Image 1 (spheres, rainbow, N blue to C red):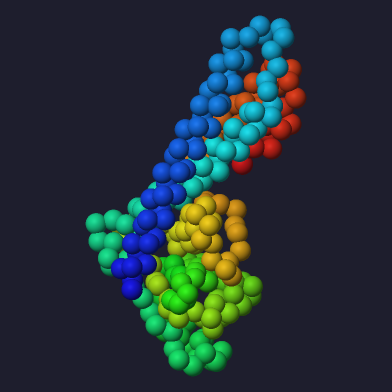
Image 2 (tube, rainbow, N blue to C red):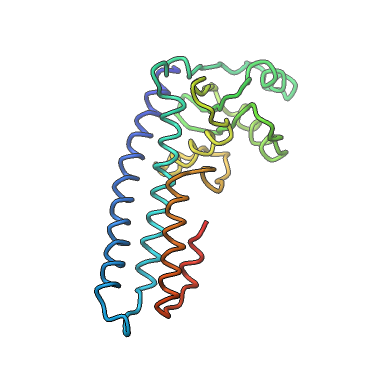
Length: 229
């Protein structure tokens, strides 16, 4: 079953990566067209189309976030020995709080991320991570135990030892990709995106440059500055 889950996740990541790169190219072409039109115009009368630029940056940043997330997952889980990164763990028959607390203590060891899901019908319920210095919140612990009571199997995903990615960052990347492909786990809460993502950081710089350009050309720049991450 771990192999089946790994293949399904790989298909989702591949599809999200393709879609993200296509949308990113489209948005960057929009931004390039705006800049070309700006510098080809009479500087005494030029006004940047703020709505078009804002829309293009929003599309580009969303697409770059997905591409960054896909790259992080591929590097961490789908390397040369990807079969060692995935392990299925059957849930205990008894689902009392004490039984599940003992299961979490003994079986969910990290650094790793995990997916709790249901076989029939197949449904993703909750993704989380173990390991690292971050303390689990009461809300996250409640969601974890709620998912353990509903689910039938836990897939534990251990990043390749060759990577230095934090388990929490890998969890966030996984949720970004699943959300993009309409497969977001039922009990998770959406977060702020992948920390340290190079693509989105690069686009934040572009957004800042567009804001400065708009300011120099006496066009209102408020909408652009909202794009700076």
